[in-house]
Length: 295
Image: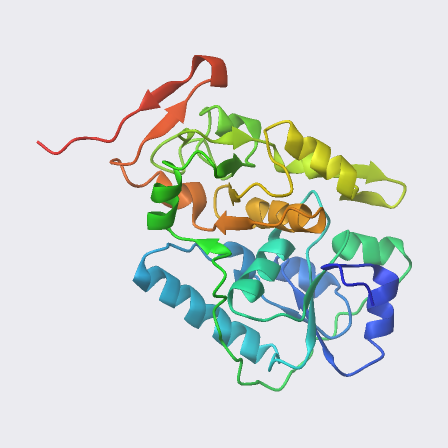
């Protein structure tokens, strides 16, 4: 088994011959019902749950997913493999699941590289049978290495030029024409964090004969170099709600970037505080919107 977070369909096929595995399908319940990998449990909340990084919000995040992963059969001894439809249709939602497990202290987690589509394209069998796993006591031990950055930490990072703030959203969000992937006015404000640099999350991937996959280590490092990121640069990644950022988190870690964390609540949270500074417009004609001052 590779030490990479990523696992191929053939590697997963071998792992399924053992009992020490839990599969998590992050897709829409309808897609799951139409067909899924044998033994996979559907946890759509991996993608849909909107987190805030207040003390109460993080506690709700922990409680929600400790319960969900425990019900899926995770006790700590099993390897969990997470998948979505494909690398370009789910906004990185399987990687969001991986990141949540990492945040909660679960170390034996992997992502199916290429997703469900890679499994099907490789000629693997699917099923409509729904498993009934035995609920387990999920050992929730939040990661102490600060892979998840909260609002206060993000505010502090804005004043530290040694930390790269990496925006990986789609281009219309980056330049402030849209507030989210769910509609231009879904969030209260449009723009980006002040001082952020931009690499659209798709740039970490490329077409291959097997479908869209992550680029090679050197290709990812070359993309990073365009915005001043080296293997030793501290990086905080953000998007709208943590999925595309989690996808990029894994890409950077796989390429050897040592210090990567995710502002998980991302633009969905930041945009809702009118007192927080943002930038809008094109990077060379940007407008900085300062925090609103109290009367």
